[in-house]
Picture 1 (tube, rainbow, N blue to C red):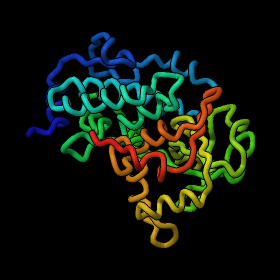
Picture 2 (cartoon, rainbow, N blue to C red):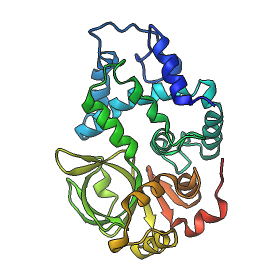
Picture 3 (cartoon, helix red, strand yellow):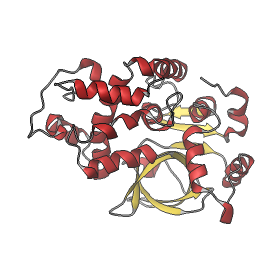
Picture 4 (cartoon, rainbow, N blue to C red):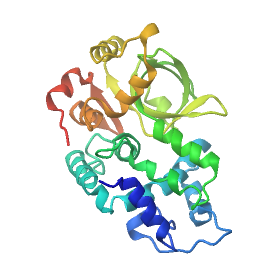
Length: 293
């Protein structure tokens, strides 16, 4: 069977015209690229930055990167080699309904999972991997490509809030034990208290050494020890034997493709003013209802 990623790249590079003028590939208008055009020239920078006023600059950069990753990924899903993957995503979308404000899952989490976490059948690649082979053709600079790669490597982790201020939070990652400074969206300082457990996807600002959120946090009604026990049961131990890469992969894929999506959906305790509270760890809420696609 031909590699679906190579098939997409080959087909894309055959085209004399490409579509990057809008965020949604299905609704976009064909535009031409000449030798002087960079894909940034095709993005609605003014409106995007205006909408993101008040957010961390790195968050704005990630949002702009997504205007490249999402259309290319959605175009790839129309290719025959991605047919089964598209069907799987449709099933997961129908099950969890991330666009429904009355369901617990934030839409951003589903999008991040579909682009950066779940592997395409019979490959070790995720949808966002369609971008790298097109770097030269689309004139994507190395800094932007590095940011996309860091987003690809990101994961939704479990953290204990140890300290907070109006500017940032000191979080301890469970079970690695490492401390990080995180800057969240305005308003979360009123919702998160010291001692709270958070489930959240973060990305590092490598210039400042801090982290910013890629999606909104879920508050989890549990304790640090509950999570340490959970991770231990799945072979992820604290201390000298801690394996960061095994932890990172587990937080992206769990023991089934929709493991963490299922946890969010089934463990929801309450939803109020966009604050979602989850009950317990996946020990009870997910293990009995894991689906494989």
